[in-house]
Length: 247
Image 1 (tube, helix red, strand yellow):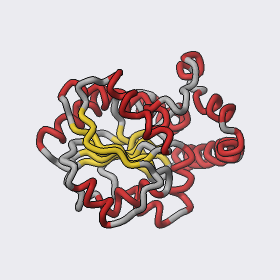
Image 2 (cartoon, helix red, strand yellow):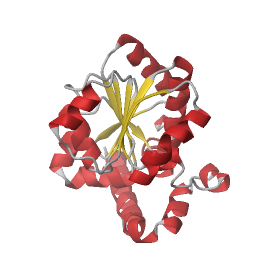
Image 3 (cartoon, helix red, strand yellow):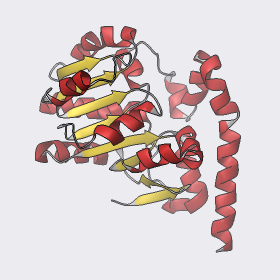
Image 4 (cartoon, helix red, strand yellow):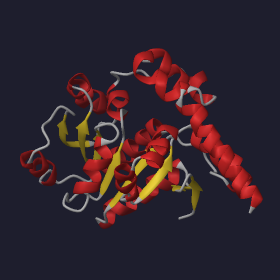
């Protein structure tokens, strides 16, 4: 599939429906496929951390996450940039809708104990045909027993929500050994899917301002990521744009 290169990272140029169809195909054929929605913060970490870069490159595909990646692609490549703005949380609901339709087995590894506690009930209400093959909170010890539990779960899709960089390292290390076709790094996605964390109102989501609402809710954890991260990311994009124009 076509990709768009942003800061040396190839971002899949796709849509919600296309990636859902791809996931369905991989599950049906039992072919291994891992993907991750990457935002500006993750790309900045990629640029400065060699170990993280290696782990990220091990994924089968990388997708953009949010308005920053979408507009960066448009600044760099104009109409040849990303055709759709994708947000990770919306994509996870597309995947869960698919899992509900096809009655797939889903394993969830990550999220807080509070999120894990209410996740089954939340999923049952929204996706009654989805089959939960296992749930482990992020506090679970990384042991051989944990790995065996996931391996033997007979799952079709594995959602890993351990946060960066642990989830990237986990998938890079265990992708081949875990017999689960589709493996997805979802960051704090389990918190949002469960309802422990509330998504931004529709107005913020429609105008690409969901990040601003998240900073409002979690200023101590997120303010540095955006106050410093956004200007640094945009500077790198402008420098890259100048290099492309001078070619």
